[in-house]
Length: 145
Length: 44
Image 1 (tube, each protein chain N blue to C red):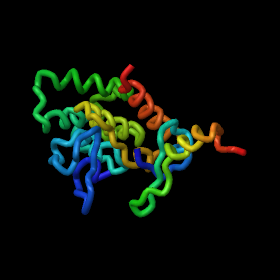
Image 2: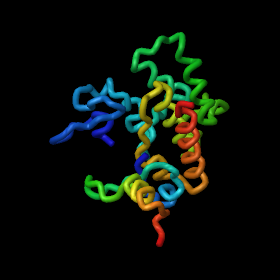
Image 3: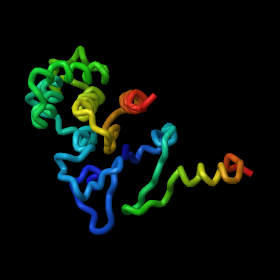
């Protein structure tokens, strides 16, 4: 995974993602960087920020125009089924819901590739099914018609 | 998606690859290509 999102370099050979040579990219410019660790089993949500603020943070650090952030955040929270919990803090969310926030955070910068490293690793069976179905829905929605 | 959850892998209608110690040991695309070449579904 780290090779794909340019956090590590291969000792030999090239890594290509969607036609781009990852070796020639900085991690911050990787087409996969928005998903970097965001939907791994190590969620790394900011505990002192709401779901909405966690997702917005991903836009703020990439220099998104502030006037667009609120609408983009709400769009992805709606996509992952958490619009009603936008003001909830991570501690107020279930494991599956926290994972959905992490996925929303990964999606909000519209990455070419969404990497999910053990996205269901610490979830119960029901939450696992929900997160897996969400990833399938995201994949289906992103495919060109 | 990377996972150790084999139940999820079995449900995934996508290309599946298996890595051991960083080396590719299985690729479902190879099986599919072989099935298409032989005109079968893998069974006798």
